[in-house]
Image 1 (tube, rainbow, N blue to C red):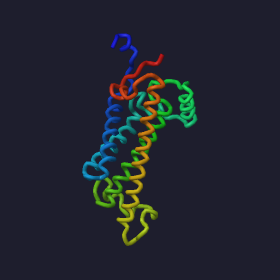
Image 2: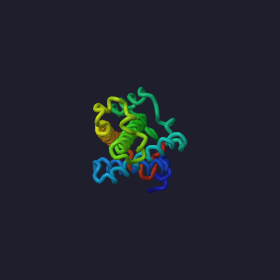
Image 3: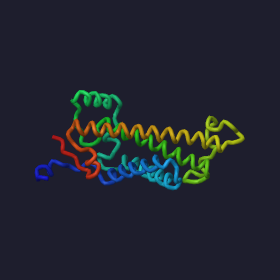
Image 4: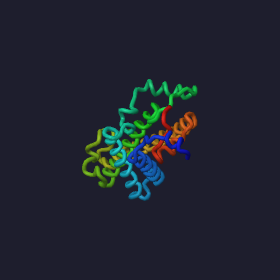
Length: 206
């Protein structure tokens, strides 16, 4: 790479953002593909996801500029305006998250949170294991989750399993949209966004 090309690159994504991103990729792929077999691998993949999401939420408040939620959490109007401009080839290039990228980041964090919490709640109710054991029980759940008072644990476990499965599938759908968006934006702006999430660098704005 020439010296001019090197000076045109700037550091955007810090190591915690990049490592956390790939931990989520590996963790979700492992958890989704194992489908609970073996249970220990599925569970530990879920714990890795939960810990990474929790750290990302904290980092979104105290991390460097491009990691902070204040840098990319905006109203839906600007998100739709950006998507409209992308469709017409007039979208502005962003150094950090684009409006659509920021919205997807928030959506994925929410979906992963629901997925992991529902998974840990299922494990707590059905097996009395995991970090929520003793905290989440059939008796602590709302009435709609327990239809049969004579078999509360089974009813609650099944309800939580359904929530967990729906959340995991919704997360997968968001991931597929995210991948499509990354490819679309990479082509539209002439840059490799996947590589940027590996080395943390992007082309400077002109």
